[in-house]
Image (cartoon, rainbow, N blue to C red):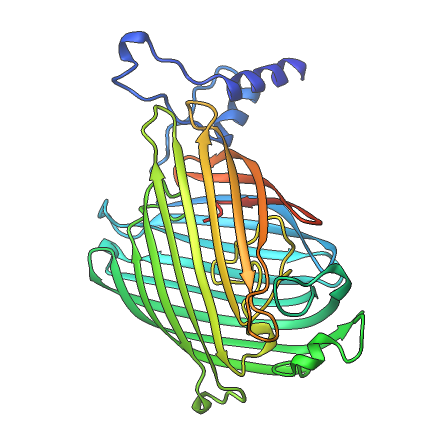
Length: 392
């Protein structure tokens, strides 16, 4: 066993070496976790060739926290190219069943499809869950003393069809449906509590049905692990009365992500993400902008889920990604993020920073999927993240 451990460390930290005269002619062969496992238990084995399969699967058990409890999540990722055109972007599907064997359990499905030649882009999410979540009122200045507990069941379904307009530009329509039921609140530090005082969408059951008008630019070849490119989205959601909405409201979501690949023999990337999420009208409580609850669901590393909430949210994050080994097996990241929300008077009342870093392990070299292990730090908060695929 000791010999195998030494061999594993040697493979991880020593890239495949080419001769000096080949240095400029050929990059080192990429390896992933399956190559390493095969090499450890079969020392004579060569790194496997990338199979010409149509679909590349990656499966990893992960953990997260909600309502103070540890949740076991199984993250299953499938990546493939639809059709034979090499210019077609990767399509991705994430299956996310989860449970804590008590108060939190559910199933989520998220997808991002590109049809041949990127003629259509189809995105969506389906989620059925029973959740426990801590909330703190509105704004960026809430403290632990404002904390209360929410229990609810949730069903969410949304789908957006984007038609290619020209090149990497798309326009589309979407349908969004949210239903929360069996909603209960407890552990409120004062009466009446913040949830009761808000008063919109706080009943034991409510639904929200909306139509999305979407503009999109996406020239990233692989959204699982973008190496360069630009992503821009502008989305308007309306929730009209003729779709049986009790509360009339709308939202605007503006999202931009830019990736800069640095000129270096090793992979080094600077990635920047920023978005504005604003809501207007009588917005149900659970539809308000909140930490880690935007469409991508990956904001605010360092803070727990739904730590801050308000009618308007501003977000900015920067990340530096780099390879540690030349064979691409090990990498690292450092990140810094800022989020800000409006309070009950609809005023921005603070900035909430987060900082951290993490390790990347090549999980599947065919789809360029990384195993993500990140540590996020924020005032009075620490979060550990284990996931598949880059954060944005």
